[in-house]
Image (cartoon, rainbow, N blue to C red; front, top):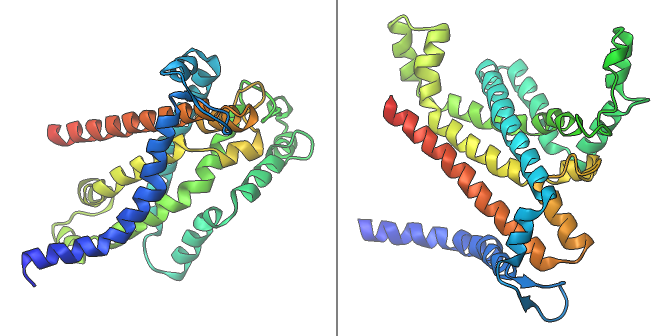
Length: 292
């Protein structure tokens, strides 16, 4: 098979996936961006209003609250899920029965429905019957008992533990796969050279999976900016918009007030912010690589 035939074979194999992706992802994004320039209730004729929807978004204090909360989610994901998953992967990447069981236990939240996860954590945070306040009371820390999901000051931070717990298993499996794909010859060479322990981890193992970590960071950022179901189940963006995210802001603006044009503008804004954050993270990673 020559080079041209090989390229045709690859393109033929990729074509169905590319077409489906374009139809169900790319085209709806473009269509949504188009309707962002209209005042449309979802029924009837759409009225062109230019950039008024976008101007209203930037003037809306709820949008800035939602953006701030999303940034908190992004930071919690990148600096919570990634490091925890990386540490667990280093500890559990071997193929023993115990390690496989522990990996399965950490991955279990990924199998559960988000509704189930939200209800579990609602009971954990419940002010009267929740296990968290019960443990604090048992330890004599009554002053630490709080209204975890009802206090506007701490509600958004109370959502961080379930967010991390829900998705750390995904990145654990990704990192375990990357660690297991490191050629055994590299480990043998390091052993011969007397490199082991922390030095081996820092100098050999982590650089070998650096690209995987970068991909995981991209998934973290994009996933955090699309967070919706967990927050909607637990708080619905309340109290007083304290846990409002960009996705819940878009949902409430679109389906509660039937402003589909405004909601489309919000969704387009979310895409732009996602691209900016992902691009910034990749630019910082490339700068660090060039400096090294």
